[in-house]
Image (cartoon, rainbow, N blue to C red; front, side):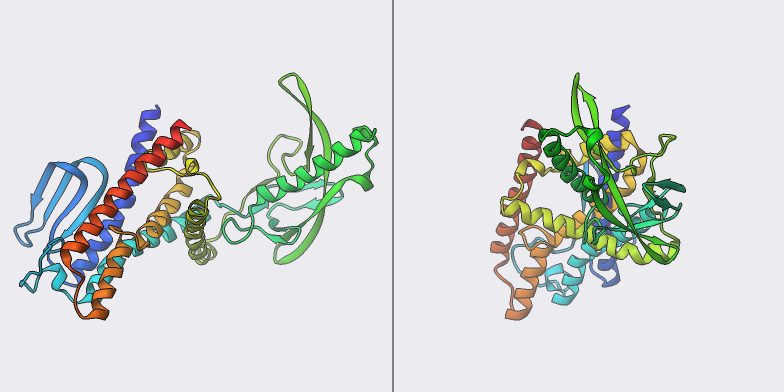
Length: 375
């Protein structure tokens, strides 16, 4: 069964890459660039068809992890006298073509963020059912917006689960100290309980609720361990008190832009933490890691795909806009330099730089995949 989820993950990743390449293709067509081939996959061609009208070749190749859109005269190391050659097109046109793939990915992130927010919800929780607990009345539909004044927002604020768990950690440390001093759980008074403030939006009205955290013992591996609970974990019937807030169509559409930027910001933060050695390289992953992660989560719950699709789209957009050789951002940079200088950098030198960059990227992806699974 896991094989089916792996194939599904491959299809999703391929779909995201093809959207990127289709962005290049459609803008190239609009600007009347001559396109030689649009390929799904790399390596040996399994199927190919050449349009008699345009001369464009459409190919399906043996390795499905990617694709490309090839323009006439794009990779020539010497200047071509042909005005239709890619490198002879005006710089602003080439820059638009290079940016088109990133734009297509980001638009995909917006669209699927909209679907995620309206169909499944994501970062903002709401009360699932009317319940009275700890002298507070929770009403179904209450949207939880802040914990101790900290906004709940996965990218630009804080994560709800993380905020509540942080309060639980503080509470456990406090109760453990009281127990070490000779108190029992039953002797911990209400005044000694740790609490936090939860802000909810109740039909447009802002309500502030005080949430107490109670100590309890749990048995794990035959040993008792001190833990704590808030009462927000589940109701008496075992169902969760909270669920993800699902947005309406218009509200979700407006929020989808912020969500897509949020996914992109998460990717940028991760890259920054990596290059500043604040997170180990083993936490990163390449293509195989991405496919494995998607397959694993999808096998648990297919709704996770609604999260992975906009995240991957934003990831591809951010990654490709970086000014690293072989990436779209680097091609934009070289074109801008040519525009400013009035002449290009030696095409052969540029070609070597992009080739070396591509080798480094492939090597990095392979290494992080190996380290991720081995360490």
